[in-house]
Image: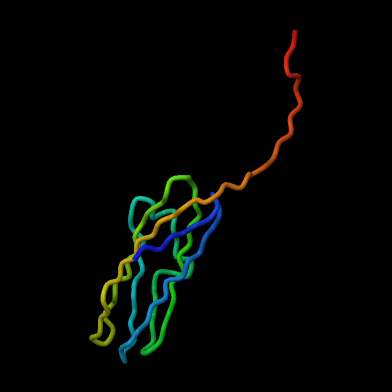
Length: 116
């Protein structure tokens, strides 16, 4: 699954990854960002995700785009064994897409068209 972060250059975009736990045991995941531009992405709520039995949880992933080219990384959710139960390892592809550029500032200049 690919999660696309679409926004303006230098804007922070947040996406939620929703996870479900269909089992009767608690699942614990360790979230890790890997890849060429993994430093551009962040997990503001920390790296540990705990999902209670028969419940849902979400992981917030943030991106602040620094360049016009697409930033790419992978979100890995690796299960920790709790009480003999381990969940499947989950992988998500993360990709940015800069749609527009907001000017940082506007400067007005006056000058003659030509000089003799």
